Amino acid sequence: MSTSAPGPGVAVKDVRVDEFHLAVDLMDGRTIIVPLAWFPRLLHATPAQRARWEIAGGGFGIHWPDVDEDLSTAGLLAGTPASSRG
Image (cartoon, rainbow, N blue to C red; front, side, top):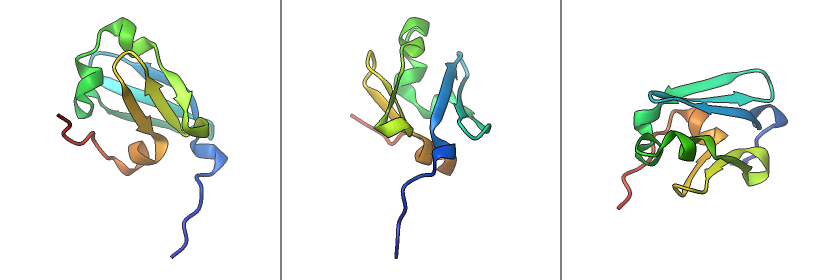
């Protein structure tokens, strides 16, 4: 079995978070929109904390330093909600 690195098209271009959804624009023009309820740390964060994000993982991830949340474009494209964390 071989695995390959994500292509440049799945790199993060922009991120928007409102009270119900997380929207991630990709470099290839697609937008991933998922329910914010999938990510409890972001759901319970303040609007200011949600707005403070950084591109991580070589362009293929998003990090919210104020709430210690990390997401990848691969996970978002796969429709993977956050696992239960203690």
